[in-house]
Length: 192
Image 1: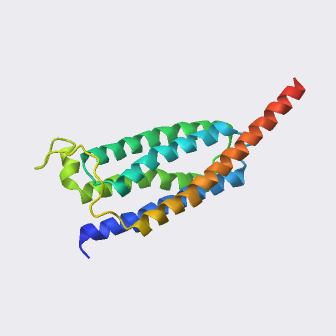
Image 2: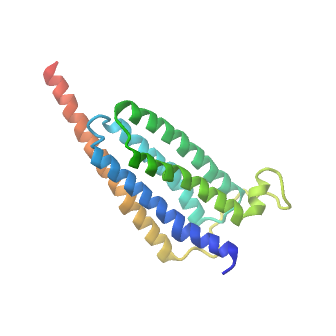
Image 3: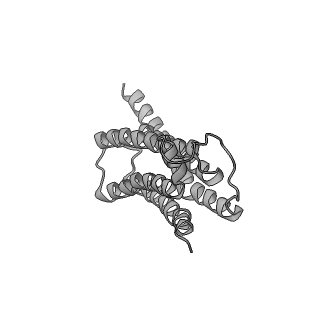
């Protein structure tokens, strides 16, 4: 197997699934810590923002030809995710302890988007260099579907795993946080 094909398989069947597992592990950490009690919905809401930020970028790299536009979109998604995660961690740290296991999971979650971006740049060096006005090809700024497309079974499996491992645990966390916030509000109203 040639190096580029091997790297693409590593990305699709190794790195991206590990990323989903890290998201699941993070949700399990937060559930075990009952973050809804000290932090409420304000800690859960940024998790949805981070999911959207990187979800759009991941869907772009799975569905579209990798060109300068997709690389730039994913780089912006990585930066937005990083800023949101920093704000989220600052808020969480002010309201609760963040155990070492959760910090380790966060490290994986922070590193993988940049690993994906680097892998894409290695796989598509002409367009990566073109972003900076370098190399021998002009940057392409179009959204074009992948040709050939990734196998439908891969796309369905990946999206299904993303929903099961990340989306549903996040939704349950937000539900717990909303219930805890209502309970705290009612208790404060009765006391006041």
